[in-house]
Amino acid sequence: MKFWKISISALFATVTFASGTLLVAQTSVAQSKSTTAPSSLKTTIVNRAITESEVLAAQKAWGDALVAISTTYDKEGKDAAKALARKVIDEAYGYQFGLVLFKPTLTTAPQTFRTTSASALAYFVGDDPAFPRDKGFALNGWRKVESKNIGIFISGDTATSMGKVTLTDKDGNVITVDKTWQFFKDDTGKLRIIVHHSSLPYSGK
Image (tube, rainbow, N blue to C red; front, side, top):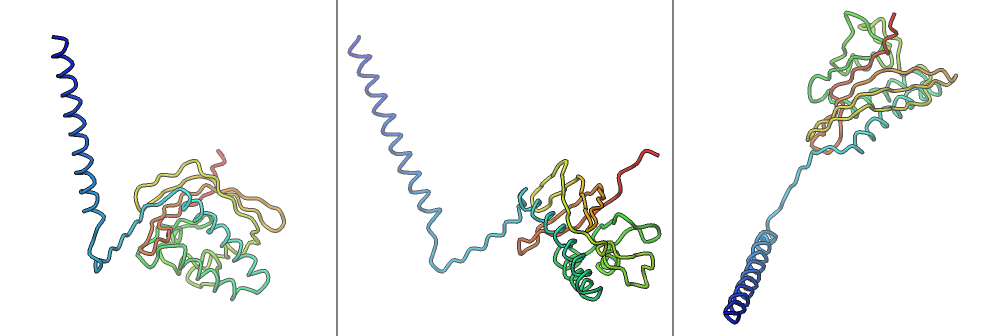
């Protein structure tokens, strides 16, 4: 009886080992088939998944651009600042894809929202008779911009952030605004702003 138990155990071990060997062999064949392709085959992979680091980089780029417009205005005048602002809007926002839901900090009805690139440009640098109340937010001597998020929600090719942005001008004056951004990644892998809501914190009065 003892010999019979040993024999069955040995047989079971042999079968298991053989099955394991067969499984490995089959897996190797499957992997070989999945990774081997005709030399003429070309593969294109478009990955629009956004990472947290990309969101943080996009926020920093926006702040750096605001400072650049301000310093350009101080050194080279409004025409140069306007040209730079137009370039920044074209590169940072998604107006070429359709509406951008932009609510700037200092706007009032009936021109509170800026869904076109022209209206965004008017907000940043003014000098547009269609927006007579715009004085040029980006021309206020900004020298430092810092973003502090309370959270970022990422889903595939879109990411939404909310938090506070602190701006410091050349005289050391500081203003803090509440800001919500939503980005999407275009076909070139660039993040673009499609929602931008900014407002002054509620004072409670």
